[in-house]
Amino acid sequence: MPAPRDDSAGPAGLTAAIDIGGTKIAGALVHPDGTMTGTTRRPTPRGVDGDGVMAAVAEVVADLARDPAWPAVRRCGIGSAGPVDAVRGTVSPVNIAAWRDYPVLARTRAALAAHGAPVPAVLVGDGVAMTAAEHWLGAARNHADALCMVVSTGVGGGLVLGGRLHPGPTGNAGHIGHISVDFDGTECVCGGRGCVEAVASGTAIARWALAQGWDGPDRTAAGVAAAARTGDPVALAAFDRAGRALAAAIAATATLVETDIAVIGGGVAAAGDTLFGPVRAHLGTYATLGFVGGLTVVPAALGNDAGLIGAAAAAAELLAGS
Image 1 (cartoon, rainbow, N blue to C red):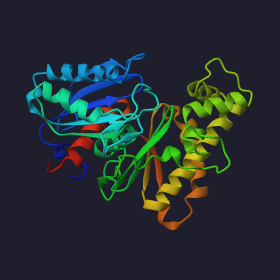
Image 2: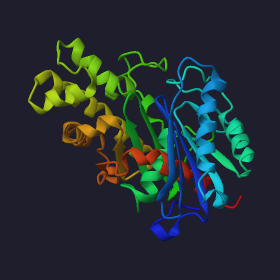
Image 3: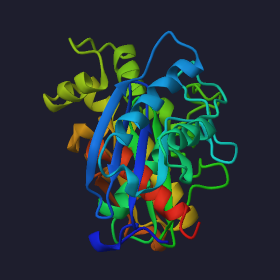
């Protein structure tokens, strides 16, 4: 079904949602109106093998199974740091070294069944999950065509086209972080050059500022943002450079598939106008054709809840009719 347009149009029954990242593994029971109960989390284990990481996921499932509402669970959505392969049900997160082609979907289904819930489950990347959340209950609500982005340690994203989530064949459609905006630019961790992530991620912003001689006490993107707010010229230039890269990629996406809104969340988006000001200022340079003239860029609305809400929303939509 299309992502719901109002709180009464959510999926029937409860959805078990799991959000897997490099620092934490979270879970919740998501209700038809998007509210969450039974929330739980575990730190993502370090220094263990793949099954050791999976043990933390199984603990999250076990926590959810203790909730009195557990018998009402009808499906499970898993949002994971990527890359993901939704066809094979595997993940190889850059920030979870123990997982390479790890069969997280099959293992999670087994954990659900072990607690009396042999329900269907889907796997999506964290950018797609965030997109599903923002389209259901957030800043992209009531938009039939949207690009949603996570700008943090990396840059990810997802698409809504024609009112429906569009994860693509492997679950990676909309991965805007690896569009090249500078053909001869910095080498990216993906092996490409000049990728958005290599310019606009929090890591890239801090790295570039430091290379230009900035030396603030907090040598992170948040520290660069704080310096930019005081008028530091290098810090301002770092965010202007990032904003220009994001604007170019957003405009390219809108030109290709006619999205009319771009929603930006993630840790770097917390910089507010320090980031959004340059993005909006540069957007007109790249979004020049008439059919993208109304393109808007807005902050994400759901914050840290987007991963869990989005995993549930994606599951409800992608499993509709199953």
